[in-house]
Length: 332
Image 1 (cartoon, rainbow, N blue to C red):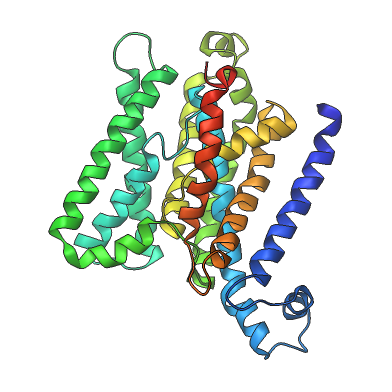
Image 2: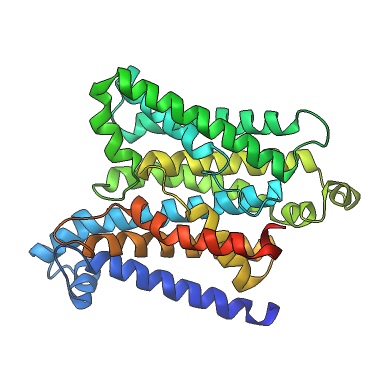
């Protein structure tokens, strides 16, 4: 496994470059790869119709896909690590739904209609949901076991879905805007969103990567981790904060995209092993690959219409989740 890790990283980088190229070239208007490269690298075709589509529409959309895919994959990886639960991800633990509640409240009651406003409400919702889930899991005997975290996440998720439904049924004016955002999509994302997303993504990624070695120790159990000199509480707080930031900004930018945070960490571990100093970077590469390929596939399955990326990631993720459940060694 260690010997093939550099090869796997190179392969993942190439897969990401291919996914980016497909995202820029494929759509309602098919553009040759040579024209895509010319639009990106050369000024000679800067005012052609193809160049306008690539630069004005597909480049921002692709960059948002890269950042959101990496963020959700990193969030899922660290959540699985700090909870020692193989099915933990921002959606399962209620964090994505918390961010969704924040956004719907912003739309319905605060009159917020931009990412700049969404993101703070999304962070607040994600943070409150994560604290609530952890508080439920730590109550009683045994502390925050994987089962208690999963059950707490399911309970909070159900509560937040009810809150969202209640708000939308009483504030019909917010329904149209929210329903397009809720399904999860990269369509219509512009350069302004790119500029707003990357600082939060950077902060979240730094926090998550800083606890990589601590996550390896946590995998051996809290007592062993403490015996190895790790501060378990700090690892969980820093990792959880990083996951909350990454989830909040990802949900605010593209909606609650399902299964990226669940599936990608397992794919990364299958490729590079369980050491988080390798799993986290690999997840950050594979997350955008999954999201961009899902988004690209959604553009061509029912032309000239478009299936949102959130629908496509769910279609890809459901079979994976079924396979995961059937593998007893993974969920035991």
